[in-house]
Length: 384
Length: 158
Image (cartoon, rainbow over all chains, first blue to last red; front, side, top):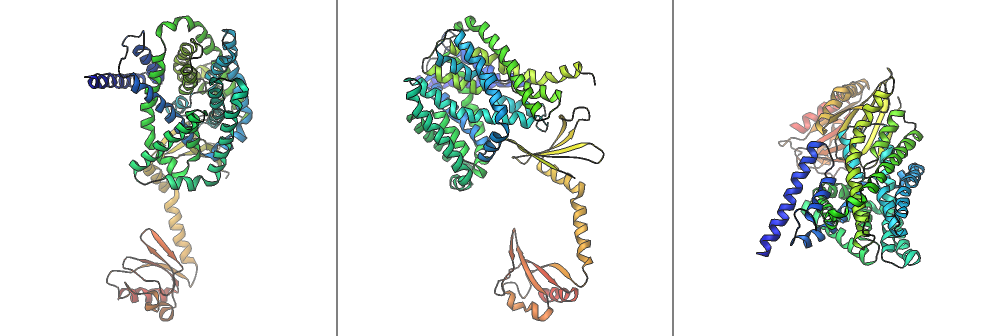
């Protein structure tokens, strides 16, 4: 009887998400905000609270984070990472300064602990590479000259995450800056080592892992990712970072084949993760933070616009291209939630979860819309 | 003509150039094999019109634009080197040398023609040794005089 209920609940959740995803596609929106809303509805104090399937969803959410970061690592090869870092470092620094600061300042102004403020800084800093890739594809902007600027900022943000996630994980475990220096040091050394190994022996490693059979490859890579993530978690370096580094270390055939195989799986578990995050947030805790979230969203929309504008100008892009680059970067999504999720799991600052949820709800919707309509706006304003 | 190559992290590569008439053209090669043909805007040189091409479509377009001309150009070049003939000869199933070695054919001493490579299915055997075995279906890449190549063709087929 219990099994029947679990199946019914899970099936209902997936079916509901499928319908929401379809609706999002119709409206030309990212599905992330709708998944978060679904999570709010399924959680405590929501419309349809889940009872028995929660355990599965909790584990599924962990797997979702691991797959999100693994595929992020697979997306870029080690040589692309180092090349972007060399060419785009100034833009990356401006991005960090302009977009981390508002979150940090807001956290402090709200009277939160410095650590909670650092987490909020991370939430406002990271652009959603998933949403950006989708938007650039749909608006046919992959060939545009400002696009490499946008992509290289995303690459640098991803690298920054490799340092930031272990830092925050370490700090959340308690013991202050000094005690977390060791895991952070370990993580940074591992990042450097993995990059070096991937640059030198990426081909060999990939040949070892590669199998022409899809089934074998899927099992091997998924198994490896979970084992590496588990080890990283055990070493207090954050499971997500472990998966990310594994993704970077793999390249060539194995990476391409794994990317194609794991993408549907990632989409499934990432959806579960967004639901789980929403699930942990009591809808009644949202109204008190709406004003703060909306203000923060407005400010960080402006700062991302400025980042893209500046970086594109530096690359010699014309005025209209600069606005397009800025607007493309506005969307926040999966990684903001991943960061907030760490703090929520550690029981830090009760209003962080609702604030991050509302913030991402606003910008995951606003970002793509802004990217789409910045063009006609500018065309009308500019005399040809 | 300068072709600029730009890396698109996570996507693939973009190549672009400016035509003599001043228009800018480009191609994005996605890692998945998809190609996008880009035609840049006159008013906003950073923006482009995108035409998505599948693998097959990109091949067809490349053929239309010049691959065929390149092949006929090569053929002409070959005839222009006087006294030298390069040819591709197939070892048919009924050939007396199918299953034999290169030495068995005595191609060099009887016709003056060298077998410089063997193409077997997807694989090539460059600079084969005399004891290399020939199989039915092999294609021999041969170099010699036009007369010699003709004689070898007869020898292989008879």
